[in-house]
Image (cartoon, rainbow, N blue to C red; front, side, top):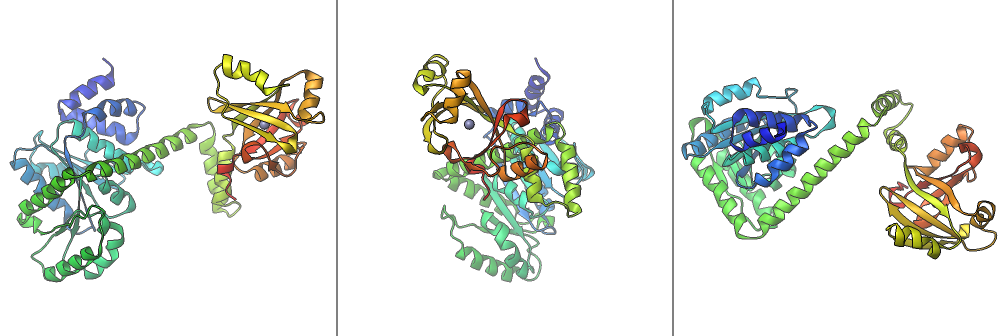
Length: 450
Ligand code: ZN
């Protein structure tokens, strides 16, 4: 049994230490984290995930603790994931968690964990939803995701919950206006905490007025619950309000729509992180990043050109151009015998060629057939009788690449880009500059920023 299989087996049994280690793995993005999550994912979907957000000072932590205790008294297993993008702590329960664990009772029916930001690569949102999935698979009945503030990351995370709760306090009339843009839309349940304070009625009226203006696609009318968390008041009402939205969701197809939206968001998060990690793991990219950052700070460069430079530096082969007398004849090998697919045939009048594009892995084979006797391909065939005619390298900004090559003294065939096959901008570099290979630069159409 592999180490990950062993860890998975133990976490599925609900072993707290295995759960903590698994969460550390997703938090740190270790190499075996994907294997772990692949095993965890099929075991998820049983827990009710409750997201709780609101301005700092709204008393969210005590509210969450009281709600957790309420669930615990009902005989349920509770997981709490606390999201704090501002905390530098990472990799285990921090002091605050330990203190809270003592309040909640040190047993295996309650698990609490803070998620901190993991450096400049982002990934907090992804790590948090993974931690929730781990707790779900580990058999927790309710998982509460609590945010410290109402930042962009935190709101995104709360949106992934089954039920989102927004916590307000009385006497923050202006604040309701201020926060409504960010978090009013995501509240399925609203809580006015510290409801023993003055101004609770006014806050309630304002909230009702705002909610009456909102048009939810699911026509749900979010309930407003009043609580005094420190005195354990209103907690049962809150649990009922959460339950009622959960029941409401289960009735329609809303639940599937919501889960599909969440899955899409999650895919994009993961993809963003993976692509960025892959890019930065390429040799020298980090050093390049440091250099460019310094250049920008010293106003010798700008972020937009710098990004183009980074992407340019990870060029790939867009296609290999192969000269042939007749495309149809050549296809007998490349398509019929080898099994590639001809996805695009086109005549490029300007270059007096007909081309066929056959994708192969990340690149393509471009078959070139002359359409007249003075075509460059006709001359090539005459001289060499076919074969590899050119290599095409993909660039982010073809004009920038051309001026750089020119500055380096490379001999260019085209000083200005022209339009090639599939509407891409292309330019040729003379074989004299490359050691005997005709080189084509390609800027893909959809990658053009102009
Ligand atoms: Zn080409």
